[in-house]
Image (cartoon, rainbow, N blue to C red; front, side, top):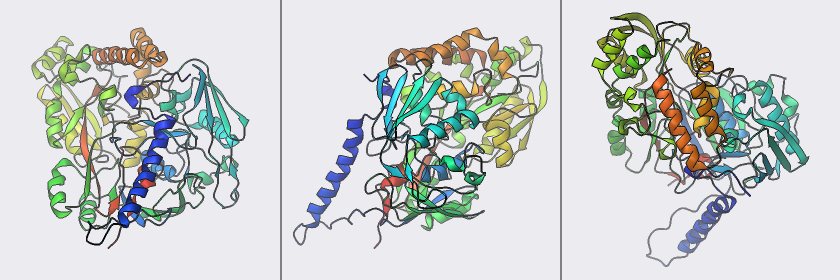
Amino acid sequence: MKLYRLAFQRQLSRRRFLSYAAGAGATALLLACRREAAPGATPVPAPIPDRGRGGTLVVHDNGDPPSFDAHKTWGYRTFMPMSMVYPRLVKWGHGPGVRPNDYPVAPDLAVAMPEQPDATTYIFKLRPARWENKPPLNGRDLTSEDVVKSWERFQAEHPSRGLLVDVDRAEAPARDTVRFVLKRPLAPFLNNLRDHGGLYIMPYELFGTGQLEKDMWSAGPFLFKGYTVGSEERFEFNPDYFLEGRPRLTGVVLKITPDVATALSLIRTRQIDATLWLGGVVSPRDVPSLKRDLPDAGFVRYVFGVNFWLGLDLRDPVFQDVRVRRAISMAINRDDLNKLHLEGECVLPWGYMGPGWHFDPKRDEFPNARYYRYDPAEARALLRAAGHERLGPYDLYAARLFWPEQLENAQLMQQQLAAVGIETRIKELPFAEFYSLGVVAGRWPSGIFHGGNLQGNDPDQHLLLFWTPGSPRLLAPGLGALIERDGELLSAMERQRRELDMGRRKELLRQVAGIMADRMYNVPLVAPALYHVHQGYVKELYYIASAQVGNTWLLDAYKVTG
C-alpha cells in the first residue's frame, strides 16, 4: 500500500504518468489523421518530429557554471547542465495541465512510482539505461549499483545531505532494483529525493577523480558537447536515451548573457528561443512590449522560486532581541516591494510553493501573521521598548542576480529601515561571493543580508537544511544556538516531518509558520512574478519553474521552420 499521499503536490501515479504518454500518442494519431484531410481543409500543422529531429534550441542563462558537479559547487548554474545528462529516480513532473509552480512528482529513471510495503521502505524498479559511449564508461549499462554508489557519495559529500539524513541504507537486490530503507517515516521523502541539486545518478568510476567538475558523461536526454566560458554550453540529443522518442530536439545551447538589456534584445530578435527559471530576465513590465514585438510567442507567468528574506547576524546581541527582529519585519512594506516588479507574492520561510503549501499572512491564515504587516509606528515602538532610538549603520549585503529589480528591492528596504531609525549601507556582491555567504549557508561577516535560497518542492526541505541545528547550511550566523534553545519550534518541525496524512501535515505546517512568525529569526519578504518566454515556432514546451530543465520541459519541445 502506498503510504505517501501528498495531494497538494499532485503526485503522479504510474497510471497518470502513462496517460501523459498515451496522450502524446493520441495527439500524434490525430495529427496523422488531419494530414490526410481533403484539399481545402484547414492547413495541417507540422508533423511532430522523431527523436533528435526537432532543431537546436537556444536558451538564455545569465552566467557561467562554477562546475558541473553539485557535490562541489551547489547552485542552479550547476544543476541545469546536470539535468541535461544525469538521470534521477524521480523528478519534477511537467506536461499539459501542470502549472509552473505545481511541482508534482513523476518517475524519471524509475519505471513508476516506488512500491511501499511499509512506511519506511521504498522499492524502485529501473528502466533499461546505459551510459554514453565515451571512455571510461564506453556505453556500459546503468544499474542499481550506480544508484547505490551515487547515494553513498551524496550521503558523504553533498551540501544538501541533510534532506535524506533519515535514510538508513540503500540496497541493490537486483540490477534493476533499488531499495531505500528509512530509519523512521519521512513524509517528504520522495520530494527530497528529487530536490534541485539532490540525488543525480552519476558514474561511480569517476568519483574522486575531479573529472566530474569539468566534464559530464550522459545517461540522460542530452550529450554534453562543450562549454565556452562567457559564451555558451552545448548539448546534443542522446540517441540511446531511455524514454522512447525523447528528446525531440536535435540539441540545446545554453547561451550565457548576463546583461538584461542584451538578453531582451536577443529575445526580441529571435536569437534566443526560450528563457530559463533563475536569472529570469522578463519581468511583468517587459511583457506588453514583448507581446507587441513577438505576437506568436508563448508567455508563462510563474512566481520566482526563491524564499527571499532579510537575514540578521544573530551573534549580535541587538538582533538576539525578538523585539528588534519584529520591528525590522514591521518596517518593511511588502506591497511596495511588489510594486517595484509589478507582481509578486509574500513568502513564508519556505518560499511560495503554490496554494498547496501556502498560508497568506495578509489574510491572517496562521498565528502571529501580524508581524508581517507594515506598521512603522509599531516598529519604532518595539525598538524603543528594546532600548534603541536608532541602530546602525549596518552593512546590507545584496546582489543583482536573480531578477532585474533585485538590487532596487534592497535599496527600497534600505529607505524603509531608515524611516524607523535603522541605518544601513548597501554592499553589492558578485555571484560567487553572494552564493557562498548567503545562499549555500548563512556566512556573512556581520550586519544584514538580503538573500534567499532556491525553493524546493516541499516546505520541509527548507526546515531541514536551513533551520535544523547541526546542518552545514544554517540560514544565518548564530541561528543554531537560538534554535537549539527553541524546543517549541523544534518539536513543531519534527511533528510535521513524520505526519503522513497530508491534511494533518498541512495544519502542523500552519503551526510552524506561526511560531516562526513570532520569533522572526529572519524576515521573509516577497517573491516576484516573472515570465518565461518561448518563441512561437517552439512547440510543446510545457514550462515549469525549476532548475531541472533537461529531463522536464526540454524533453517534449521542438522547433518548426517555414
